[in-house]
Length: 198
Image (cartoon, rainbow, N blue to C red; front, side, top):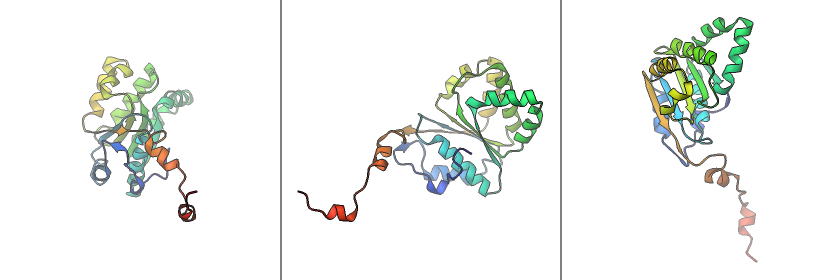
């Protein structure tokens, strides 16, 4: 997990629109995992999409579920290794048993034909049975073009969108925006504040 210590209790929504604590807890306490739903967190970089996904997955683990984090841009290389070692089928079977799968940075980087086909296998095993969280900057209406092959793109999108909750995050980057600058600003001690101005 990228943010192994992320928890829903520590989630901060300052400066972010499109989701709040009640909405996030509403998802966490629902039967989204048992129903095999897809959750998507979209928005610009630095808004906390991956952190929120990891916090949800961590909460799921506390409830006795299993979770796995995968970065989509690295997936092609990992799949090539699995195919080369002859272990792809076994990996796919194990992945199909994971209750919550995070696919982070969806839609960044090119998608080759082998990865596209393997991704369909991953999604097909999960639809209606296992939950998937996707974080992305690429708008959903551009996913079809990014996936490339029209037939496979139709199949993947049909499966992902059967039961999907979408959260579109907006605001300033937590890394470089006003919130980040305020957090980094040094605070005065009580003694410094008591010093008279000269």
